[in-house]
Structures are given as C-alpha cells and as structure tokens.
Amino acid sequence: MVRSRSSRRYTSAPRRHSRGIVTRPFVAFLLIASFGILFAGCGSPPPEEDVFTFTEEDVARFRELSGSSTASGSGETAMEPGIKLTGTGGASSSLPKLDLTLAKTYSAVRSGPAATGEDLYRVTNAYLNVRSEAKVTATEVARLSQGDTLTVVDFIDAAWAKAKLSDGKEGFVSTRYIAKLVSEEQLQAERKKYEGVYFVDFGFLNVRKSPDAGSEKIGELPGQSLIRPISMDKVWARVPFAQGEGYVAVQYLSPFMPQFLVRQEFYKLPILHYKLASGDDTLAALRSHIAALKQQGVTLWTLRDLRELVLTQEDRDVRVPPKAAVIAVSDVTAENVQEVSQALQAAGVSATLFLRTSDIGIGGITEKTVLTLAANGFDVQSGGHTGDDLRSLTNAQMQLELQQSRVLLEEMTGKPVFAIGYAIGGVNERVMQLAGEVGYLFGLGAAPDATFGRNQFLRLPGFIVSGSMTPEDVVGIVRSEEQASLGRSALYVGRRRTIDTAPNMNRVQGIYLAFV
Image (cartoon, rainbow, N blue to C red):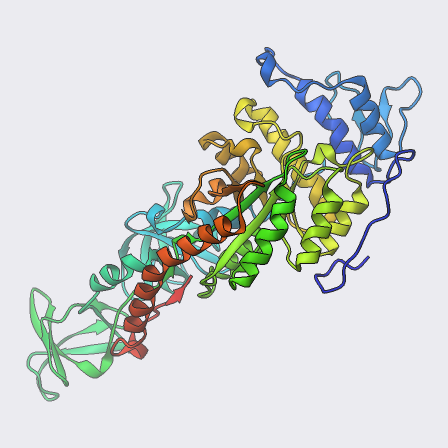
C-alpha cells in the first residue's frame, strides 16, 4: 500500500467481526506483556482506583491478536524468535525497545531561551571534544553531542572557551561549535555585552610604544587574543598591555562576538480540538467549521506540521503562517472512524487523530483502517492506551499507557508518534515529565488559549469545540488570535531588519543569526 501523502485517497474494506486481523507478532506480544508488567514484581498493591483490570476475555483477545496459542502445559506464549513471555507469575519478559532516538532532540527543542541560564551554551556540531588545555593536541576530557549544553566560564580567546559540564567536569572547547541560546528580545542586550571587544585576526600582532610603524616594539599579542581598545582611529588602536599601554594596527583586529542561536520562543497557533461523543453534532459541525475557515483563508495544520516547523527551526528561520489553526479530533472509535475520515477527505483537509490503542483490534478499529488513515495523510497520534486520566495512575501504569500506545501505533503506521492527547485534558508536571521521558514532543491539554511557549509543548492549550458552536464562533477564535499576533509580528520584522543591516556585519566573527 502506498503510504505517501498525495491527492489519492484510500479506503479500507468493511470490518469482519467473524475473523481476527493479522498483526505483527510483537504488537500482540506488547499487549500481553502489559498484563504481566502491571502485576509482576509489584510490592504493595496500588489504590484500587489506580489498578488496570484485565479479564480473561482481555487476555484471550490479546492472544487472538497475535494469531498464536499457548503451548500445552508450558504456560509460554509463542512469539517472535528470540522473544518470549513466560506467564504473568514473575518470570522476566524480553520486551521490544521503545525508540527514544529523538527524545533528546525533543527535549532540546522544548528548552527555550528562558530556560538556558546566563552563560549556558549549546553544542551546534555533531560532536564536540572537551580538552584539558586550550589546544587541539590536549587530552580529551569528554565528548559532547549536538544539542548538549554546557556553561561557559570564560572566553580564553576567540577560539577557545573554558567550560563547565553538567556533571561538574571542566575543560576547554572550541568556540566555533557552541552557541548561546537567546530569544529575539534578548539578542540586542547580549550583543551589547561584546561591543568594543576585538580579537587578533592574524598569527600575532606587534605592540608598539607609540602609534607609528617605526616606533619601538614593546611586545606582541598572540593570534586570537581578545582585547578591548581604550581608543582607536582608522589606523591605530590604543590597548592595555603589560601593566601599561601600547598601540596596535587596527587592520589586524576584528570584532569578537560569540555565536547566538536566536529562536522563536512563543507561538500563537489556535488548536481546535473536536472531542467526539455518541449522539452529538460535533462531527456535523466539523464539516461546516472547516468550510468557513477555508473561506476565510485559514491554513489548516496538523500537529505533524507543527513538529516539522519546530524541528526546522533548529537550523533556520521558519514561522507559522499568519492565518493558521490546528485541527485535532479525539474519541475516534470504530463506530465513527469511517465518518470522520470521509468528512475530512470531503473537506480536502488533514487533521490530527488521537486513537486509543485499546480500541484497535478485533471488534474495534482494524489495523487496516489505521493504515488507511495514515496513507490518506492523516496525522495518527496517541490517545493513550485505555484513555484513562493519566493523573490518577501510578508512575508504572502511566509509563505503560504512554509507551504501549506509542509502540503499537508506530509499528502499524511506520510513522513517528510524537503527540499524546490527554484524556479530559488531564495533565500535571508528573505527567509531562513521564511523557517527555518516553519520547513525546507534544501533549494536548484543555486550556482555552492560543499562545504557548516551548516549555509548554507537553501541555499545549486547545479550544474544545462542541457541536453547538457555529462556524462564526470558530472563525472568531482564529481571527481574534490572528489580530493579537499582528503587533508581535510587526515588531519581529522591524527587529530583524535592524540586525540584518547592522554595520560591519561581514566582519563579526562567527555570529550565527539563524532565527530558529
């Protein structure tokens, strides 16, 4: 089946309740394992309201999903070669590993300028060696990866900085591969700190007693040395030297400026969250709302579009369109999934669909339907496994809910699952922390606001849209937020023009004006 996003649409065959669907073996295994994980090796039982209840029917369903049967008398379920589950009585299980390769990247994306600290810098290269001395031949103390942070204690010269790592170790790093993370508002103040600071842009520089090439040489400055001239004209600069003063040729000096990663910290993007409920008019309203929004020229996004934007912002400046809104749909079930898909396809838009993975399988949303949604360009994300309020669960239960739904959906669709739609919008600091640890970039809450910062990516605000809301109501939400953002956008454009036309920009050493 073609999975790429295109104008072609796909439909799935009607569900057959008489037969089970064929799933990948470890998908069903993970479901079975969830039974064991929750109860194996536990100490005192959690409060009753925190306990997942698995019936014999649930276990039978899990085994039916895998198309496997229990070996006679062994208590061992047949699984993929090398993977086996021995009962639920305490023997260890070999679980498929959750893909956390992007967890570190997502964590770096969420850390905005406000969270960086006064002298906190980020590694911009694929890796960075930390050395015992400020030279390339010195012993390697540590090696950092792109996105890692460190504290700059001091700039030794234009090429080297003394740094302190998160584990307390100290060493020296190349200034070429680090950048300070600042907001647009902070940039001007940060640059002002280095006004009047120059570095020797040559192998060495003679220091003379008076401003004359024939004057007595009283010493020299090594290449890359940092100096702040007392005064200067077009030819000579008077600089402090050896408890006194001296003169150096201006032509061998260049302005010094550390690199900055200047990025957008706040976003204005209304998320229109349609929570479907049996018997209401929300789905019918969705159609009319989309038509009205498109008529007003609103760009309709998914959370996948937002993810692509913030990841791109790690390298270059891109922005949310002036008129944009995210369409998200939750409480998608076997009873309404086809209607949801058809309504969105007819409107010619995609949307983020939050699916509960406990609803996927026999008698629910088939794997073929999930694949069809992904192939038709819908952004399939996690609604959790059971859809329980995560705040009421223990850490172990919550982790299982978050991990299991991610693994199952990624295995089915072959696409990254990076967003969690919290049941009833329930989220707190504990939920956010665990969601980040298991590899989510976004989490959708229920605060009615369109403005959010990077540090709120795991509790994004969203407007709950009901079937009673008119198209004018929904257009009004987007337009009011659009008007509120106009002043901020104009301010940014003016500030950027000032930066881009700054004098001597081509001589500023190593400045990294990637507005990311």
